[in-house]
Length: 285
Ligand SMILES: NC(=O)c1ccc[n+]([C@@H]2O[C@H](COP(=O)([O-])OP(=O)(O)OC[C@H]3O[C@@H](n4cnc5c(N)ncnc54)[C@H](O)[C@@H]3O)[C@@H](O)[C@H]2O)c1
Image (cartoon, rainbow, N blue to C red):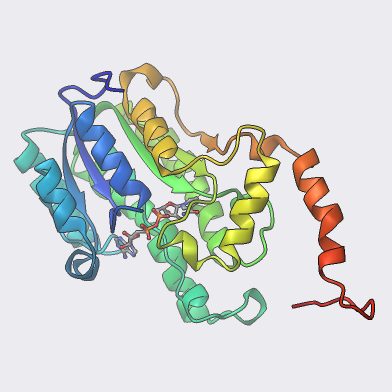
């Protein structure tokens, strides 16, 4: 359904890699709602992924940039203002990556150089984006900036590894910068904490299929998918949410308020029997 919620607004969407990416769905919905946008991703992602295809489809220029590099970010903001014809009304940070997870390093055997990279790519890049935009006065009064996060920032999720620390930092940057940017320029900054979602980054989480199944059983209205997330982002970019800032907003079907659901409990109760062999020994698998 189309509501023209972003009519006349200018936006930048970081992190659309392929049609599973949450940023891909947000870009499509933003244009559908009347916005004009630019897209950004790393040069290698632009070469290897499908970002160009999305650019053609949405008539959106692609600005290759490493979000950990301040000069690259300056280029993205200045070119976006030039291409779109004015200050930016909304920005999506949909960026995350842990080289420790990729290299299968466990949380009690982290490579600290790789941890620096995880934090830089997945969290500090958001600070760099905000600081760059503020110094350039690139975001219009009342503009809306969003980053995507996961509940592993608050609670332990097996296998989420150093990304949990990155998400905790991302949410803290959202509050700290939200105060300053809000007070000085009326810009609002929030994170959306999304259900586990099957994307390229999502499939990097150990046991993601089981996590999706567990979250689905725990959530009274089921997991939110990438399209649901896109709809929430559109609402947050629109003028309908102009007093919402410095928040971590759950888009998770109720998961974050649950302790235990009947569906998850039943699954758990029937689980151990499936893991016992004919001689009664537990199969750890
Ligand atoms: N998929 C999930 O289960 C889930 C749940 C909650 C939050 N999130 C968050 O949503 C966001 C988007 O992830 P996704 O699930 O759509 O996966 P995705 O793999 O499609 O997107 C991740 C993006 O980050 C980009 N990226 C990596 N390093 C970068 C850098 N240095 N500079 C610029 N871009 C860089 C990648 O190229 C890719 O486009 C991430 O922050 C992720 O942590 C995902």
